Amino acid sequence: MFKAVLADSRVWKSIIESVSTLVDEGVFVADPSGIKLRAMDPSRVAMVDLDLPKGAFESYECSGEVPIGVNFEDMKNVMRRAGSNEKLEIEKGEDEARLKMRLRGKTTRTFSLPLLDTGKEELSVPRIPFNVTVKAPASTINEAIKDADVVSDFVRMSVEDGQMRITASGDRGEVEIVITKESGELLSVEVKEPSQALYSLNYLSKMMTASSLAEIVAVMFSKDMPLRLDFNLSSGGKIVYYLAPRMESE
Image 1 (cartoon, rainbow, N blue to C red):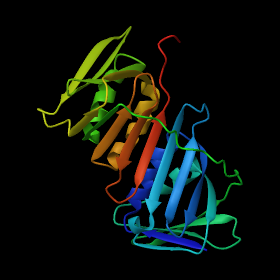
Image 2: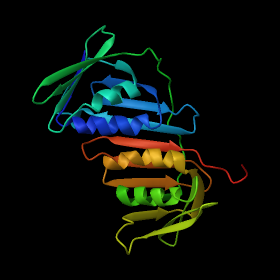
Image 3: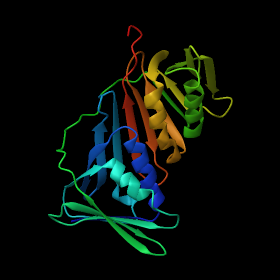
Image 4: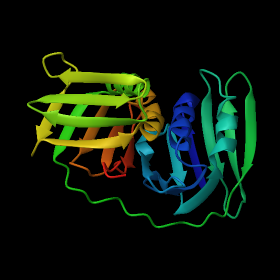
């Protein structure tokens, strides 16, 4: 038995949009502590790791470990029907093959989605020593990624001398964005050694969808190593993304 209630259905709508940018299907695992999801995109270049503790919900009941396999496009279609000032109830009864999603507002609307038997792939979180960790407003990084996307398909991130530089170049031109502590946009910076790496803008643009859920993002990377983005959700919980680097030799 599993049942969770969110006071604002738009929170779940934004979470599903942030996850579905990378994966089409996935398995939420609900247990007495909360809901988790860990999945890789089909090309296995990126990973999303979602953790929503029970405290992020208005009410939460779960009698044990409950796997919930869903098609995110179907769930996203349901959440598009969510209006403002509506609560969301998510419920799965014992031995039921459907997930109930109930929107409570001026009316009560109940959708039932078929659950997928996708299997539960055991994915490990990459254990990477990060040489650079910066924190900045999520909106600032999001705008920088949008700027880079104007001219290229890849972006270079580098941190040195207390500054973060996001640069991109291609047939369409070049751009450089410099983020400093003096401007108030670089909230903190930790550098074990100056580092830079190249990443796909296609994936980064999708990951930055989560900027609607968090005021601050932590960006972590090392030279030519995977990138990690941490979004601490304003409503409680966390979304973490990992992205493999684009190697210069390719």
